[in-house]
Amino acid sequence: MSSTELKEFLDSKVIQYNKYDFIESDPISIPHQFSVKQDIEIAGFLAATIAWGNRKSIIKNANKMMDYLGNSPYDFVLNHSDSHLEPLDDFVHRTFNGLDFKSFIRSLKYIYTKHGGLESVFSTPSNNGALQHHISKFKSIFFEIDHLSRTEKHVSDPLKGSAAKRINMFLRWMVRKDNAGVDFGLWKDISPSLLSCPLDVHSGNVARKLGLLIRKQNDAKAVQELDHSLRTLDKEDPVKYDFALFGLGVFEKF
Image (cartoon, rainbow, N blue to C red):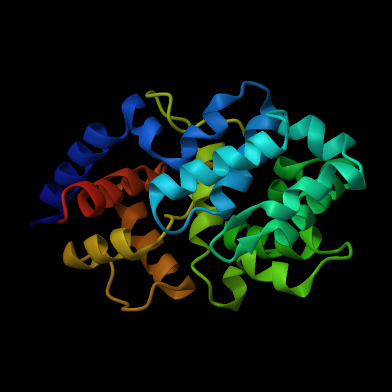
């Protein structure tokens, strides 16, 4: 395909998959249960954190997380006591367990009470403006309080080579605004043009078949390469193509 044909093809796939009925079978369905900004942020962050493995299992366990939080995540984060955290010991999703869950709740309280909330931390200017630097800074702030070292692996750091797929996905949810009601567009201080594609096995394989990505590993360097390719297709909204790459890979086995 020529570059024009490739863009037309991917644009058509964005239209096909970036629509409201995408929500039901995707982890983004978890934050869509809420209407208050902080509830949406916290629900989205927790759902994105465990978004690896079987999608049905992800959604099932993310809903369990919300149940543990009384389906009022912001209120729980701000007002919980140690006794409120004890039931969380029973939670497990793959390698993310109750100890990690409790640590995340404590760190989220720290983020909201001492740093102005998730949006404020991610929107803090970095030296070069790249969101991957923002993610790294977020991780350092998130773990400023006492925590188990095992929990650190559940927040990726692009500056240490990670593709940071789950955090990039969460940022897409919060920053990108679409006309279909899928992505929220809650955060106004970050431009959608700075977002990076949530790179995983499916999107990576499709991107390579389409010539958008050469690097074989799904790591931070691959994210940078894919960023460049997608921004040549749409510099204002490059991560809309996440819907195309994901849909082609998961639903069409491209």
